[in-house]
Length: 359
Ligand SMILES: Nc1ncnc2c1ncn2[C@@H]1O[C@H](COP(=O)(O)OP(=O)(O)OP(=O)(O)O)[C@@H](O)[C@H]1O
Image (cartoon, rainbow, N blue to C red; front, side):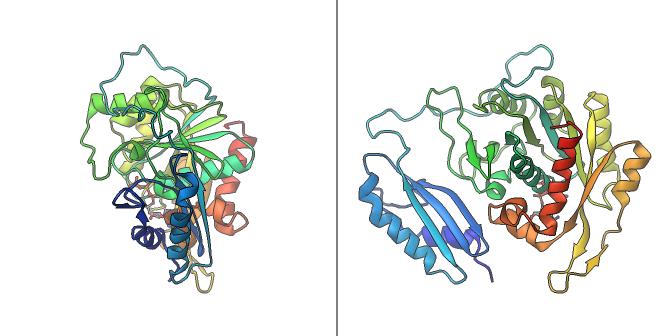
């Protein structure tokens, strides 16, 4: 069994953080935990004043992970980027406020294009496609941001291997995180552990406005927005309040024929957001043992449907266990094994978006 991020976190959960009475996991000093094919890396971000005194803790953390079966190498770094001990803690930003009145769609400062990744229903691999496309576009030299706006199931922190509450030095600007060449922000990072999101309408709009407007995105060629599945308030707010370049619709072969995917298309049509094209995910199944390719869900459904609807077909991504394992370990397939066939599926779509001037 390959070692998983959960295995690593549970081993690190037994390493005490001196002076806190907590483990290093509970003390929230762990950052950027990534697990890739037995290679584990993580950072302990501590107060500058504690810095060197915590070297034994770093060594203990490294040893705890090295002891796990299946671990091939461990990179455990100590950084001291935290606030100085006597500095006031950063103000606690409240996410999920009421929306600020706003006339008409607006641009996000510094961001040249906003591209939504959407799906008619959950579980079709929208977040997987968004993460891998973001990494693939960044690898092609584009400045890319990834906003996880999936309020009900934010999965980008897990997929992109980022953790920890983002900082806000001035109480207004939210500093995004970075990994795999991508600037990342997720609603999941702003919520406290176990905090269920029960917001509706106006609160969702307020949260989205904060994520779009208060995050210091910097200069980006494109901001990729991972939407919640379906056609709810977040989708409407995004398409009505922001200048969207377009939407990429992700579908499985059997789902495209169903009403869900068409409802999403209709919504973008009504809100006048151009649909950049369709991606067929879980297009065919690649057997991890023999490499045989089987079309479990049928094949080509999305391509045929795209042709029927006059939409560009952007490409197909196989159902491949390597894609799921990569996503679960915080290193998307494109970053973990850039030359593999599964990564190539995403990279081909990224190159196409670039060559057609979409990004
Ligand atoms: N092509 C693929 N091959 C193998 N596993 C995949 C593939 N695409 C997605 N998965 C896996 O399927 C699960 C669901 O994927 P993902 O979270 O990306 O879907 P989603 O559409 O964003 O779902 P939701 O909107 O409900 O969050 C994940 O465990 C992911 O790793």
